[in-house]
Amino acid sequence: MGEAKTSLIEGFKAEHAELGAGMAALTGTMDRLQQGTGPAAAQMLRETEQFFRQVLVPHAEWEEMTFYPGVGDLVRRHGDVNATMLIDHREILARISEFVRLAGEIESGAADPSLVDRARILAYQIRALVEVHCLKEEEVYVSLLRRHLSEAEVVHALAVGDQMGHD
Ligand SMILES: [Fe+2]
Ligand SMILES: [Fe+2]
Image (cartoon, rainbow, N blue to C red; front, side, top):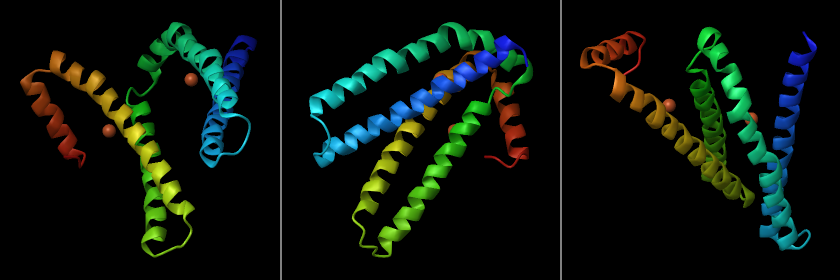
């Protein structure tokens, strides 16, 4: 692989690793705040705000200005336009499985009080993912369908979906 490609991919992965570490620090901060442990609340929250301002927001801005336009044509020519949506489904379903597992433990009378807390946090994650996922479907898919698909094309599209076992 060429130098530019390697540095783009490595740089991209490194930035996502940094976001991952920042996300872990974010939830760690909030856990410590709730438990009343760790450094002063104001300082912890300031660091969190700094992370958003200095790392996360610039990363998203760079993607919108440079990365997405750069790879847009690649996705259209070689990618699957629905791939990101399927990844959403996969990740939502994985969290639902974990939620169901925790719920089973709670229902069977497990005494560990942290179970409910873990299930509650998972419930908020599932909710956020589902909310964003539905926004994507409505803002992108439904609005395209509304503007560009004829009545006959909708009927045809649904018939194809039925043949594939969907309803
Ligand atoms: Fe990203
Ligand atoms: Fe969906």
